Image 1 (tube, rainbow, N blue to C red):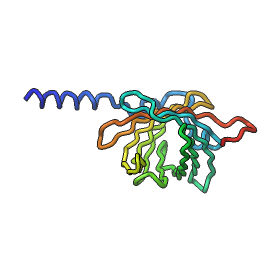
Image 2 (cartoon, one colour):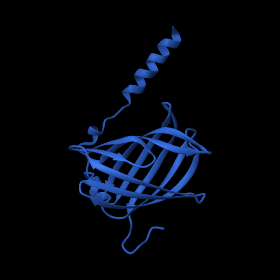
Image 3 (cartoon, rainbow, N blue to C red):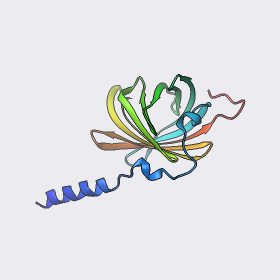
Image 4 (spheres, rainbow, N blue to C red):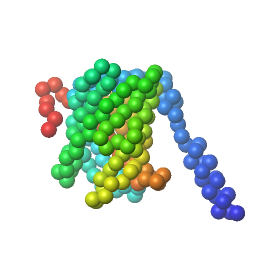
Length: 180
């Protein structure tokens, strides 16, 4: 009986911590996703294991273009161990403050909501890990700090258990600079 009570208490406490994106509706500056990514952007990030250990560091160069209503983001990753990856997102507006997205390694469709300075972006990713492929769920939260700084914090879960977190800082590429 005590174990059941403890389990119910944990589940209830866990559900109390969920903040919806609408909580940030009045925050400034307002995030316009298409405008922020309308210019070349670079990002720096880390992946931390559950223990807090930084397991990977990476740099990303992002270019974009429009195809009608669709926003295409071409992300090119370079990891600290020299590995390179590419992910091309196709994002489509899905009503006021909502986006849908797809990419080659995204399973199904990504869903995003924007309010104020925040974006919550959720999707399932086919992640190569040590010669295997894991299906992991990502819950990304992006916050526009000023016109040129976007911070991303993501929780990565497998089978509902957090396996790590990703932190990224996005900035526009400086005039005349290339991102290689």
